[in-house]
Image (cartoon, rainbow, N blue to C red; front, side, top):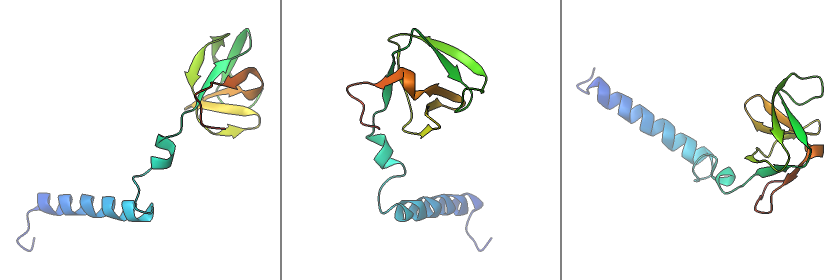
Length: 103
């Protein structure tokens, strides 16, 4: 196609998209603001239920013992902190670790 190999067009397209995303993010790598943010919690309840969604009626997917430390996400919804995909814990029974920078 126009004397340019298809592989070359793909590389040019990928670099173009990466450039647009970089420019759209103000010249910073994507999620660079979150990369510096540390979010870890310590369990303060005897046994903490980990639920599939942010609410008391959501199914329990696992449990965590007292003093367990795990990474979390800055996202809080309905009094529940997100740990990861389909994993939420009640804010009432966790505390941010001393090295956490999230709120």
